[in-house]
Length: 188
Image 1 (tube, rainbow, N blue to C red):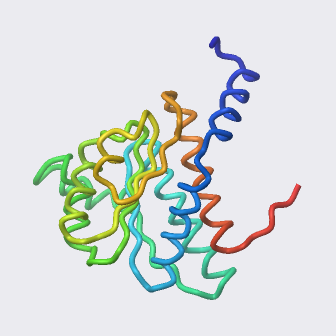
Image 2: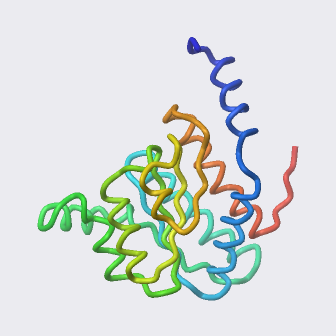
Image 3: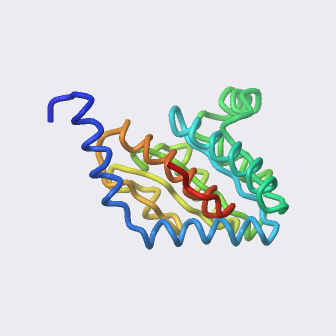
């Protein structure tokens, strides 16, 4: 399909309408249950997915507490540039998230991985280690889910092979989580 504003919005709406509502509900319930049972929730991704991860944690940490009075123990593994570059320099870029998982996460915590392709090696390694440590894993992906959807306990896969559409819907997912947990009204 040739690019135009109208075509982009049309494709965006088509992909949103293809979302599996039961997968969304399962993921939202998982995040709510982990948060309200005092578990740590960590999120990571690369590029646009790193920014979505940061966006999730910003919204969830702030709004869940403001709207419910309950604590949300969320961290973004993509936010600490000093730590990321230290691991990348001293170990490898592929280990920047898995080493943080090793240090920060406990059995029963939740690791959310975001990857457009589902195949980013550093995110895959983080999910594999989380599984070994009995940390629950949820992946938010596109492009058929990739390796992450195969190894994660839970998965929400965006039905698109367009990276920008996937990234847009990843941000929509973060807002769905926040609004669902906080029970915020949708206004016109």
